[in-house]
View (cartoon, rainbow, N blue to C red):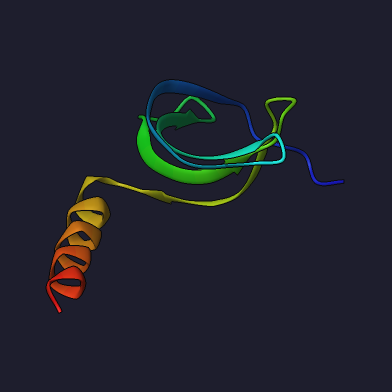
Length: 73
């Protein structure tokens, strides 16, 4: 099993889905002691991170613009 980097969830912004004890959360998370970034990921019931993606501020702003445009149609 791959080693999980150290992490600290600074703030939970939203829970997008709760499925069989796993939660898909939007968080601000520090990974390996670095500055907190926006993170969208599955979290297992025991608190371990699952698959997900992390965005710096610029990437999050670009994603927001894409989503706003896509949802207008």
